[in-house]
Image 1 (cartoon, rainbow, N blue to C red):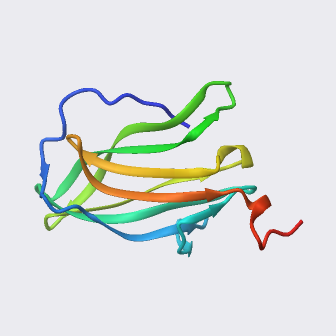
Image 2: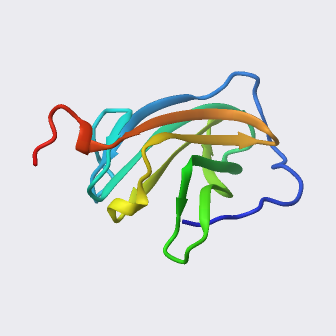
Length: 147
């Protein structure tokens, strides 16, 4: 997982007052197609989850930088450093006054997921544009878990 500090001025384009909306969310396959629409993700196996969104924006066609932030329960990385998320700038496509894109997380090992709330936020100049939460559940205690 990457930990990054975002420095500098906010993106020049200011988002409209209206927040964006999540257009799809859930578990995705290796080809980035939606496999299951859900906000609950089970631990114990590799998984890719995330969401797609759109939001009105006062910007020319092209692109806009938004800050993607992921916060999650504390967990140790392979290098021994504990992390509770990351924040980094990302470019998203703008067309017809609407910014569209997708964000997500790929857990490659069972250790890459910690049970609890995982919150994605896309923001512009400190203003939240889109927020999506997932609840990571320990599958050992799920009623349908197979042993």
